[in-house]
Length: 140
Image 1: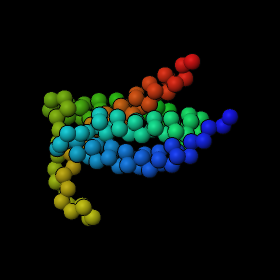
Image 2: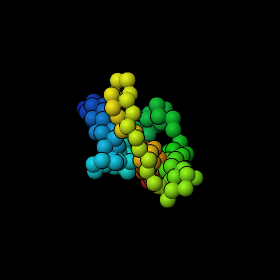
Image 3: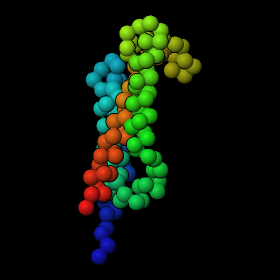
Image 4: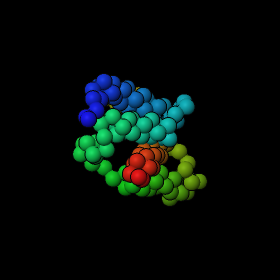
């Protein structure tokens, strides 16, 4: 007997957009308010897992062709690279640099190296969390 998951899949389509939008908000506010790469990455991973639960692993893998182990490794390399960049310039490991720039659409905007570090953390968390969930789901 075939399951009818129309309601679950319809709600998931809307919920994933809301979760990813909130995840982006958490990610971008991380170096000024609670949030950042870890919680932004964790909520993004939750949205991806919701897709897997609603649509099935095979169907989602057709659309999201990503090796989450490599994504986690790239994230760790970005985070370590950000920390080592400050060492190259004679500062302590993970020293943050920031400045204000006048961007055409956004106006006066602060850009910080913490955002690059948070990107690495987010990618590492997304890759690790989704990889763990997929490993558990494949265990029979």
